Length: 279
Image (cartoon, rainbow, N blue to C red):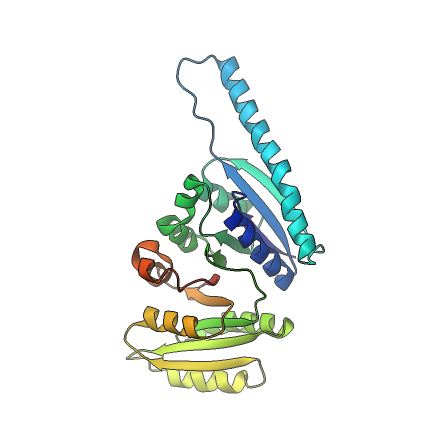
């Protein structure tokens, strides 16, 4: 069975992202691991070892209390979405968020990571926005589903896949099409033409034939600015999720980075699914 990791701070934004994590778990017939990471207590020098131990125990107890207080709401969300069959496991860890995410992925053999990109808590907000979100995406070798704070939960009926028309994308495309067929959704393959792509026409013709009976449509553009073209398409088309392949930091940065796309932030309100490159 596939496994999905969902880090949370129990904020309203994170709870919204949890709905997508549940939906992905249902989509993939997967187990869902909910991870809450808290910072270790800051202890001044000169305190006795006994007091230090008490502070640590109190901090651990408070975090467990927080887990018990917030878990029922998430379980209720699962019930409201009629996804009670999705297995959900809760984990609490002390440490730094990004390293603990990477540790949890390795220890639990996680297949997918779902991340909210904002939170009510300022420290969590800083950890998940900007460079740290991008760094996590570039470090992990599993697909990452990033949920922007503006995303309103809805079924994943219309999915966009940004393609370079490269042979290495075909395994990812097969995986996406398998999912959309099982869930009666539609996949839009979007390609922005670039100079020097010798095999693009060949790949396009191959895929048109291969996927002729699949719920797939092709959308091809001639444009200089790839990111702007994609964002324009996303804005004007019915879309519930955008999928792409992680090739380099620059492309992901241009799409996700707050500093780069601040003026376009209101336009990108849908989840962003980043697959690992098969190269």
